[in-house]
Length: 209
Image (cartoon, rainbow, N blue to C red; front, side):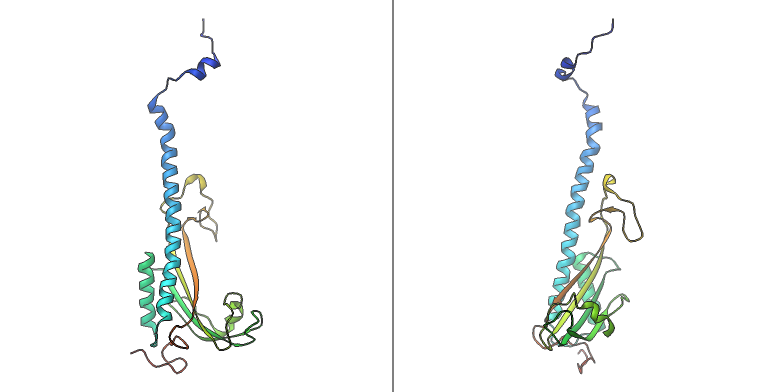
């Protein structure tokens, strides 16, 4: 005679196999640990990227001598060290000022002093300034501002398979920030100890000594 199945007895039964339970739960524990680790690592890298930009922006805002390509490459090296970036890390520095209707963000006249970048990244031309109206903060007439843009690549240590999306042309596979990403930041600073940040031989600026 087959034993009669009792739901009540099944619920009260505390017999189990530790090995089976470990096999069932261990993958979930590992998945959870790696996911939490990746989340913290993403925000760590994101924070480093922004703080690295602030650091080099502050550095250049204090310059009183002219800067040049060698100086900018050194700034990139500092930024790369701070952010633990790879060879694709780049820095672009642009100085501009307002020359008319400065209180009107839509119709003001922005003038480009100079724009330089590392790694062969495109720089801004005078024709590009209209597109920057929505980005550049309001300036006083003749007031100069230095726009520092940085880019650093991030490779996630672990992308949880259950959260991984399909890679497309403009979107890396992953989930939210939990994917291989490129952090691009823009910071605006004013020259602290002079009317402008000089690039050698621009606006009568002397060569860097």
